[in-house]
Length: 401
Image (cartoon, rainbow, N blue to C red; front, side, top):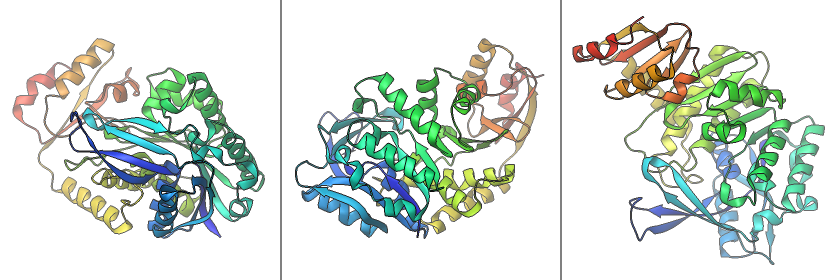
């Protein structure tokens, strides 16, 4: 019996090593692929996982097969193809921690998986079936993926989907959107990034974007990752914000979203998807955000997943720091116009330390303009400044309610 089975790409990531502005970057080869990153994290937490996909019968493919087994993932569903090469990706680091991807995949082995090569036996034995959009870019793997999803649904399995949009892999944006909407329409659990919501719906406001998604989805749980701003969870009519665990040791954000996704699936494996409370969602985001933060301090992802002890230690340390925190001041503020919000964010960016805005239990980083626009600005907001200094008083006064 497997807890999670995932279908998708397994490839070699050539990660840029050194400064992002280096004109002659050095690349280091790492095993990669979003579905296997998710499985590796779960395997490290003690869950039974299996992968379905295809690699070339070459040195890269054999290395990938060996690596996933070493991380605790069953390779029973991994197919080796003598007629096509293993897919390669070059990952360039950009300023601010973002990345640029270049793929050698014309075709690559991962998109040559056929319907009859998909192990239905593995899907029958799992509790959650997970997939992404990269296996929907080309035939025959698109048909293989859709067949697997249909089989999993008919077998009563929970379906998890992460768009993981990579523009270079799609011939047309409309083709990509159609594929992502397909995945959204089939899943019970959705993990989607903030920039993907904007790309997919054309909306800046997360709440509005999620409402558009809900209208076309059967998903019970929708999670939005906000990068360094944390994450959001939408469950039925409930919305919860998870604060980020920021680190000055961050060197590579590759795999952070996959690690977060694994943290969410871990929670669902333990608690299910029925009758969840706000406190449950807060616990879920706390664990997932902490795990994602740790993996950004390491190169690669598949071999770099944190274990439960590391994650719990980070959470415990954060709580201890909060208890010992310096002087905290709170103020009611009003931000009713776009110009007011922009000026407010500019002013808050000059303040050192955490600056938060809250409505009820929903908390957002006051330095995030997109986050603020997701709040109801018709009513007063609670501003909280940690590590208060008297010099901040003149700045705050302009916005007091």
